[in-house]
Amino acid sequence: SLSYLLALIPIAFIGVGSTAPGLIAGAIQMGRGGKEEGEALRERICRHEAGHFLCGYLCGLPVKGYEVNGDTGVACVEFHTGGNADSKGELSNDDIAALAVVAMSGSVAEIMAYG
Image (cartoon, rainbow, N blue to C red; front, side, top):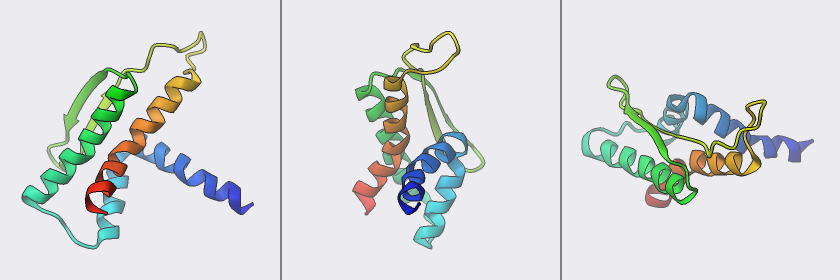
């Protein structure tokens, strides 16, 4: 019922954010109503990515790669998982929990700074 629908919101956010982070960034921009430019936008991106890096480090996930899309300016950090996948390639519960924390951490870092 309603509680199940509400429980799906963070799962959908993580799913969309991990596959198409530009959609989340666009939704945040539309929600704020204004377009950031220059130094303010660069600071927001740095804070967002710093949130991912910090939480990934604290969760013990080594950085696999980092890239900034030249066209959109959307940054993306990618982490190695703990290598605890079973024979079917499925991740352990600890790996999934760590990746979920890292996925949400960029938005949390922005919210902590900008409200």
